[in-house]
Length: 266
Image (tube, rainbow, N blue to C red; front, side):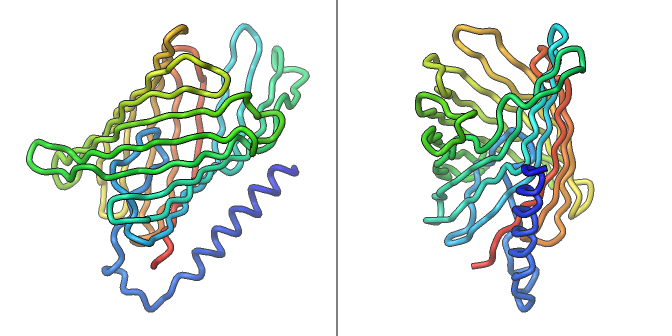
């Protein structure tokens, strides 16, 4: 209940920010929202100069292996993005989670709870789409273990980078994909990551997507997953989303998520 209360407070705080939007802003003058959620694929685009964009939501992941069921409840997965320059943004991400475990669906217990490591990063927009050349961006992130709760605190700092690409197929559809690598907390070997997402605009406000994504640890088996979802653009700087997914390789039985994204007008 404590973590649910934290999530509700954070969500209401976000709604409070939404309510502060100046009604005198002309809807058509606000650049359309481009987010890095709800899928695993990051956009190559940066937020507008001096804008603050908040992308937040909840996530549930469940997996059962040999009678042991593990559930992750991510109550507040938040990314804050700030447009420092025209093609450069700063990024801050944090999450509040519970990890629960049960054997044969009995004796469920919380094995970890609290804040995940704070993530600091930046994204630079390198190339704009032209002809057959896609939009290209680069992201670099670093997770800080000393700011995490004891249950989620790793011994080392995690580092990752990812190149992001997107290409417009036509007025209603496009593809996006990421290629990168990470050196995760307490895991010294490199893990290569990939994503591939197809998006389709059902209407001017409602869009759908389908995605494949996974990773290739150097000294472990590869993991491959899929997800699909919807986004609805309430206004040019406010969007809600929902997603569902699962794994191909036994890494997750079900993934469910929902969230909201908002850009504060500058």
